[in-house]
Length: 462
Image 1 (cartoon, rainbow, N blue to C red):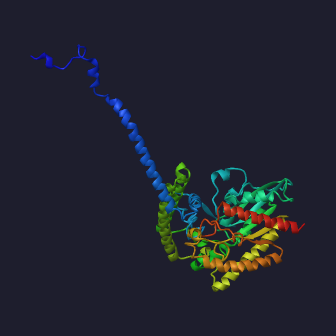
Image 2 (image 1 turned 60 degrees about the horizontal axis):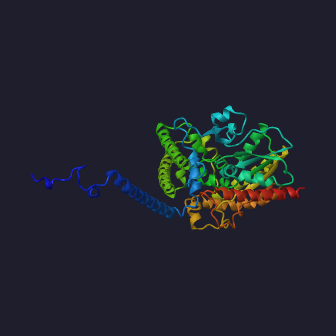
Image 3 (image 1 turned 30 degrees about the vertical axis):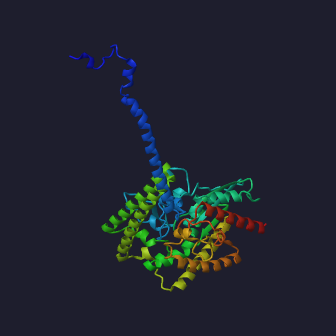
């Protein structure tokens, strides 16, 4: 054996320093050194990818300035599409017993109160007025109760900052300074005259007290009848979508199934928007893009189901309860009759209000389909004009006559004001859909114009 050729043993007399110099490094130590750079590199690449996706989403969404408002509308169950403000609420009654609206003996249709509202103290909500507020019956020298009447524009004005803004502005007037101002809402999506006149009469008959009554209307009064009531053989003076409301009371099995499908799709759309709005990811433009694409897909499915439902309803016989007396005149005569109904309803509301010592103010709501009422660029047009071509001619023709009759209301002593030009010099986007609804900025400008008009009227009457 040649012992001199064997490897040195630990503890032998060999060179210790030389032995340690050739020892293998610890594997765990190597992994610690290499894992962190790899992890940081991956995080960096993920961040870069997210940034690219977000920038790309920003580019794709650059032409959607009102996306946030659209998401709020979807979460609230409001259809931002071209079918109008009432259509999305009508067809979901058969879905698992969920009822959003009920036929009302005086108002035509109203929101079905929640169990909480019905079990609570007396309120406008329990009477079917959504977000109405408490039922105030007693006048107080220290409190000013303001009632807001109208359709969806008035309803959103009340709930999207307009009511608070006008309360803040009116608080500065000598007549109201130092008093508590309370806003009650007697407005709902799709309502039009004479529903608003009847709403005031109904509430006053129940003893509800108003110090000020504000009427904000116009669009539904001239668009609903020629666009969807008269073509369906329904009286133009009946509530919006009346035949569809009553059709849901007694329909064939197949139609009920289709109503259920519409309800499911609508619920899915609301829940999807609510989940995104309730998540911190709602600020991500990529998440907003995904939401927008899926929401559009659901909207297309909803539209297809509603068209099919309308077709089935068109083939189903209608009785007088659904149609009322048929309209026999032409479109020009129809517009004149609608403007006359609006005019007479305003006079009657003023008479009802003043009989109780209530100040009555009537405002013609603004609308983007009134020529020259607002500069609208391509971005805002994508939201405010596209899809609204179906009712734009009715709005243009009807508003022309309403503005003429409105001047006559002033002569007859009504505190009437035309708000159609309040956005005439506003370049920024105001409208959040193609119907005429506006967001917080638009409601703030509208509240300021209304408060200024009220102040001028009260000052002139001193």
